[in-house]
Amino acid sequence: MEVIVAPSYAGMSLRAAEVVCEAIRKEPELVLGLPTGATPVGMYRHLVAAYEGGQAGFSRVRTFNLDEYLGLAPEHPASYHTYMREHLLAHVNLAPQRTHIPNGASPDPETECRAYEEAIAGAGYLDLAVLGIGQNGHIGFNEPGAELRAEVHVACLGVETRRLAYEYWENAVANPFPSLEDFPDRAITMGMGTILQAKRILLLASGESKAQAVSQAVAGAITPHVPASFLRLHRDVTVLIDSEAASVL
Ligand code: PGA
Image 1: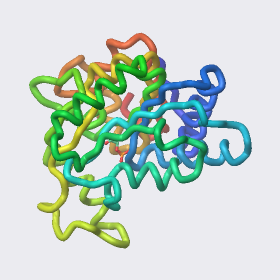
Image 2: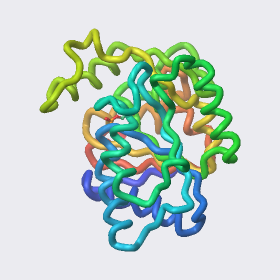
Image 3: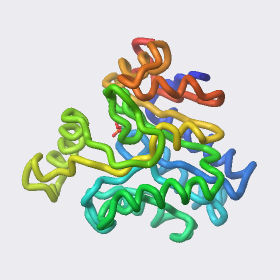
Image 4: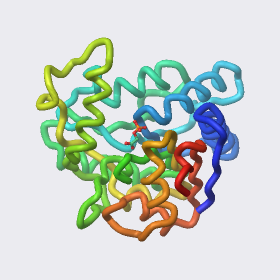
Protein backbone atom coordinates (compact mmCIF):
# COMPACT_ATOMS: atom_id res chain seq x y z
CA MET A 1 0.00 0.00 0.00
CA GLU A 2 1.46 3.32 -1.02
CA VAL A 3 0.37 6.28 1.11
CA ILE A 4 0.64 9.75 -0.41
CA VAL A 5 -0.11 12.71 1.84
CA ALA A 6 -1.05 15.89 -0.03
CA PRO A 7 -0.81 19.14 1.89
CA SER A 8 -4.45 20.05 1.27
CA TYR A 9 -7.77 18.93 -0.18
CA ALA A 10 -6.91 20.90 -3.32
CA GLY A 11 -3.61 19.06 -3.71
CA MET A 12 -5.25 15.68 -3.12
CA SER A 13 -7.92 16.44 -5.71
CA LEU A 14 -5.44 17.58 -8.36
CA ARG A 15 -3.22 14.53 -7.86
CA ALA A 16 -6.25 12.20 -8.00
CA ALA A 17 -7.33 13.70 -11.32
CA GLU A 18 -3.76 13.35 -12.62
CA VAL A 19 -3.74 9.65 -11.70
CA VAL A 20 -6.99 9.14 -13.62
CA CYS A 21 -5.79 11.15 -16.65
CA GLU A 22 -2.47 9.27 -16.74
CA ALA A 23 -4.36 5.96 -16.60
CA ILE A 24 -6.57 7.01 -19.53
CA ARG A 25 -3.56 8.15 -21.52
CA LYS A 26 -1.95 4.74 -21.02
CA GLU A 27 -5.18 2.84 -21.67
CA PRO A 28 -7.77 4.84 -23.62
CA GLU A 29 -10.29 2.02 -23.09
CA LEU A 30 -9.88 2.22 -19.32
CA VAL A 31 -12.58 0.60 -17.19
CA LEU A 32 -12.91 3.11 -14.38
CA GLY A 33 -14.67 2.66 -11.04
CA LEU A 34 -16.06 5.91 -9.65
CA PRO A 35 -17.14 7.11 -6.20
CA THR A 36 -19.59 9.79 -5.12
CA GLY A 37 -19.76 11.91 -1.96
CA ALA A 38 -18.01 15.08 -0.88
CA THR A 39 -14.46 13.77 -1.22
CA PRO A 40 -14.20 13.34 -5.03
CA VAL A 41 -15.92 16.63 -5.95
CA GLY A 42 -12.54 18.36 -6.41
CA MET A 43 -11.19 15.48 -8.47
CA TYR A 44 -14.19 15.67 -10.80
CA ARG A 45 -13.71 19.44 -11.15
CA HIS A 46 -10.13 18.82 -12.30
CA LEU A 47 -11.21 16.05 -14.68
CA VAL A 48 -13.75 18.39 -16.29
CA ALA A 49 -11.08 21.11 -16.55
CA ALA A 50 -8.65 18.60 -18.11
CA TYR A 51 -11.29 17.63 -20.68
CA GLU A 52 -12.13 21.26 -21.45
CA GLY A 53 -8.43 22.06 -21.78
CA GLY A 54 -7.89 19.16 -24.17
CA GLN A 55 -5.64 17.22 -21.77
CA ALA A 56 -8.10 14.37 -21.24
CA GLY A 57 -10.65 12.55 -23.38
CA PHE A 58 -13.15 9.97 -22.25
CA SER A 59 -14.59 8.78 -25.55
CA ARG A 60 -13.45 5.16 -25.14
CA VAL A 61 -13.51 4.99 -21.33
CA ARG A 62 -16.11 2.88 -19.57
CA THR A 63 -17.20 3.80 -16.03
CA PHE A 64 -18.92 1.87 -13.28
CA ASN A 65 -20.09 3.67 -10.17
CA LEU A 66 -19.64 2.01 -6.82
CA ASP A 67 -23.19 2.27 -5.59
CA GLU A 68 -26.66 3.84 -5.67
CA TYR A 69 -29.42 4.33 -3.13
CA LEU A 70 -32.20 1.82 -3.32
CA GLY A 71 -35.54 3.45 -4.07
CA LEU A 72 -34.16 6.56 -5.76
CA ALA A 73 -34.87 6.87 -9.47
CA PRO A 74 -32.06 8.21 -11.67
CA GLU A 75 -33.83 11.59 -11.86
CA HIS A 76 -34.12 11.96 -8.07
CA PRO A 77 -32.04 14.93 -6.88
CA ALA A 78 -30.30 12.80 -4.23
CA SER A 79 -29.51 9.88 -6.53
CA TYR A 80 -25.93 9.16 -7.50
CA HIS A 81 -27.09 9.33 -11.12
CA THR A 82 -27.85 13.01 -10.50
CA TYR A 83 -24.56 13.51 -8.66
CA MET A 84 -22.60 12.00 -11.56
CA ARG A 85 -24.48 14.07 -14.15
CA GLU A 86 -23.79 17.25 -12.21
CA HIS A 87 -20.14 16.57 -11.40
CA LEU A 88 -18.90 14.76 -14.50
CA LEU A 89 -21.22 13.27 -17.10
CA ALA A 90 -22.85 16.49 -18.30
CA HIS A 91 -19.43 18.06 -18.86
CA VAL A 92 -17.22 15.47 -20.60
CA ASN A 93 -17.41 13.18 -23.63
CA LEU A 94 -18.48 10.05 -21.79
CA ALA A 95 -21.17 8.37 -23.87
CA PRO A 96 -24.23 7.38 -21.78
CA GLN A 97 -23.97 3.76 -22.98
CA ARG A 98 -20.44 3.60 -21.56
CA THR A 99 -21.37 4.87 -18.09
CA HIS A 100 -22.88 2.49 -15.59
CA ILE A 101 -24.62 3.22 -12.30
CA PRO A 102 -26.91 0.71 -10.58
CA ASN A 103 -30.60 1.47 -11.04
CA GLY A 104 -31.87 2.20 -7.54
CA ALA A 105 -35.44 2.19 -8.79
CA SER A 106 -35.28 -1.31 -10.25
CA PRO A 107 -38.43 -3.31 -9.43
CA ASP A 108 -36.16 -6.33 -8.92
CA PRO A 109 -33.03 -5.23 -7.04
CA GLU A 110 -31.58 -8.75 -6.80
CA THR A 111 -31.65 -9.10 -10.58
CA GLU A 112 -30.23 -5.59 -10.89
CA CYS A 113 -27.33 -6.60 -8.61
CA ARG A 114 -26.56 -9.72 -10.60
CA ALA A 115 -26.72 -7.80 -13.89
CA TYR A 116 -24.41 -5.09 -12.52
CA GLU A 117 -21.84 -7.64 -11.33
CA GLU A 118 -22.04 -9.40 -14.70
CA ALA A 119 -21.57 -6.12 -16.57
CA ILE A 120 -18.43 -5.36 -14.54
CA ALA A 121 -17.15 -8.92 -14.99
CA GLY A 122 -17.95 -8.68 -18.72
CA ALA A 123 -15.75 -5.58 -18.93
CA GLY A 124 -12.92 -7.62 -17.39
CA TYR A 125 -13.44 -5.93 -13.99
CA LEU A 126 -12.16 -2.45 -13.21
CA ASP A 127 -8.75 -1.28 -14.38
CA LEU A 128 -8.74 1.53 -11.84
CA ALA A 129 -11.15 1.83 -8.91
CA VAL A 130 -11.30 5.26 -7.28
CA LEU A 131 -12.78 4.98 -3.78
CA GLY A 132 -13.75 7.14 -0.84
CA ILE A 133 -13.87 5.88 2.73
CA GLY A 134 -16.55 6.35 5.38
CA GLN A 135 -15.84 7.59 8.89
CA ASN A 136 -16.64 4.04 9.94
CA GLY A 137 -14.23 2.53 7.41
CA HIS A 138 -16.85 1.57 4.85
CA ILE A 139 -16.02 1.30 1.14
CA GLY A 140 -18.96 1.85 -1.16
CA PHE A 141 -21.80 0.72 1.10
CA ASN A 142 -19.86 -2.24 2.45
CA GLU A 143 -20.58 -1.36 6.06
CA PRO A 144 -18.65 -2.67 9.09
CA GLY A 145 -20.05 -5.92 10.45
CA ALA A 146 -19.38 -9.55 11.17
CA GLU A 147 -18.96 -10.33 7.49
CA LEU A 148 -18.51 -8.77 4.09
CA ARG A 149 -20.16 -9.68 0.81
CA ALA A 150 -18.07 -10.39 -2.26
CA GLU A 151 -20.40 -9.39 -5.09
CA VAL A 152 -22.77 -6.56 -5.93
CA HIS A 153 -25.58 -6.69 -3.38
CA VAL A 154 -28.27 -4.77 -1.56
CA ALA A 155 -26.73 -3.38 1.63
CA CYS A 156 -28.40 -1.87 4.68
CA LEU A 157 -26.98 1.51 5.63
CA GLY A 158 -25.64 1.76 9.16
CA VAL A 159 -27.45 4.24 11.41
CA GLU A 160 -24.47 6.59 11.38
CA THR A 161 -23.90 6.36 7.61
CA ARG A 162 -27.54 7.17 6.98
CA ARG A 163 -27.51 10.07 9.43
CA LEU A 164 -24.36 11.57 7.89
CA ALA A 165 -25.76 11.24 4.37
CA TYR A 166 -29.07 12.81 5.45
CA GLU A 167 -27.23 15.65 7.18
CA TYR A 168 -25.93 16.79 3.79
CA TRP A 169 -29.51 17.20 2.53
CA GLU A 170 -30.67 18.79 5.75
CA ASN A 171 -28.10 21.54 5.16
CA ALA A 172 -28.77 21.82 1.42
CA VAL A 173 -30.82 24.63 -0.13
CA ALA A 174 -33.55 22.17 -1.08
CA ASN A 175 -34.05 18.98 0.94
CA PRO A 176 -36.15 16.40 -0.97
CA PHE A 177 -36.67 14.38 2.23
CA PRO A 178 -39.25 15.52 4.82
CA SER A 179 -37.25 13.74 7.56
CA LEU A 180 -34.47 11.21 8.20
CA GLU A 181 -37.12 8.48 8.12
CA ASP A 182 -37.68 9.25 4.44
CA PHE A 183 -34.02 8.91 3.51
CA PRO A 184 -33.06 5.58 1.86
CA ASP A 185 -31.91 2.92 4.30
CA ARG A 186 -30.55 0.53 1.67
CA ALA A 187 -28.30 0.76 -1.36
CA ILE A 188 -27.00 -1.33 -4.21
CA THR A 189 -23.23 -1.54 -3.84
CA MET A 190 -20.27 -3.30 -5.40
CA GLY A 191 -19.07 -5.99 -3.01
CA MET A 192 -15.57 -6.12 -1.56
CA GLY A 193 -14.73 -8.84 -4.08
CA THR A 194 -15.94 -6.71 -6.99
CA ILE A 195 -13.70 -3.90 -5.76
CA LEU A 196 -10.68 -6.10 -4.99
CA GLN A 197 -10.80 -7.53 -8.55
CA ALA A 198 -9.72 -4.07 -9.79
CA LYS A 199 -6.21 -4.01 -11.20
CA ARG A 200 -5.44 -0.82 -9.34
CA ILE A 201 -7.14 1.02 -6.47
CA LEU A 202 -6.94 4.70 -5.54
CA LEU A 203 -8.43 5.50 -2.13
CA LEU A 204 -9.14 9.15 -1.35
CA ALA A 205 -9.74 10.69 2.06
CA SER A 206 -9.87 14.25 3.28
CA GLY A 207 -10.33 15.85 6.66
CA GLU A 208 -9.88 14.99 10.30
CA SER A 209 -13.18 13.09 10.45
CA LYS A 210 -11.55 10.39 8.27
CA ALA A 211 -8.23 10.18 10.15
CA GLN A 212 -9.22 7.31 12.43
CA ALA A 213 -10.69 5.23 9.62
CA VAL A 214 -7.63 5.83 7.44
CA SER A 215 -5.31 4.81 10.26
CA GLN A 216 -7.32 1.63 10.93
CA ALA A 217 -7.40 0.80 7.23
CA VAL A 218 -3.69 1.38 6.70
CA ALA A 219 -2.26 0.08 9.96
CA GLY A 220 -4.94 -1.71 11.98
CA ALA A 221 -6.15 -5.29 11.88
CA ILE A 222 -7.63 -6.62 8.64
CA THR A 223 -11.20 -7.11 9.78
CA PRO A 224 -14.74 -6.83 8.38
CA HIS A 225 -15.32 -4.30 11.16
CA VAL A 226 -13.14 -1.95 9.06
CA PRO A 227 -14.01 -2.91 5.48
CA ALA A 228 -11.29 -0.64 4.05
CA SER A 229 -8.66 -2.73 5.86
CA PHE A 230 -9.28 -5.45 3.25
CA LEU A 231 -7.62 -3.21 0.67
CA ARG A 232 -4.32 -4.30 2.24
CA LEU A 233 -4.85 -7.72 0.61
CA HIS A 234 -4.54 -6.02 -2.79
CA ARG A 235 -1.16 -5.55 -4.40
CA ASP A 236 -1.68 -2.16 -6.05
CA VAL A 237 -3.39 0.32 -3.76
CA THR A 238 -2.55 4.01 -3.49
CA VAL A 239 -3.97 5.84 -0.49
CA LEU A 240 -4.08 9.53 -1.44
CA ILE A 241 -5.09 11.70 1.49
CA ASP A 242 -4.72 15.23 2.78
CA SER A 243 -2.71 16.02 5.88
CA GLU A 244 -5.80 16.18 8.12
CA ALA A 245 -6.87 12.67 7.11
CA ALA A 246 -3.26 11.58 7.79
CA SER A 247 -3.18 13.17 11.25
CA VAL A 248 -3.25 9.93 13.26
CA LEU A 249 -1.11 7.82 10.95
P1 PGA B 1 -17.71 11.44 1.63
O1 PGA B 1 -18.16 9.93 1.62
O2 PGA B 1 -16.76 11.60 0.50
O3 PGA B 1 -18.98 12.21 1.43
O4 PGA B 1 -17.06 11.69 2.94
C1 PGA B 1 -17.19 8.94 1.47
C2 PGA B 1 -17.81 7.60 1.81
O5 PGA B 1 -18.66 7.54 2.71
O6 PGA B 1 -17.42 6.60 1.19
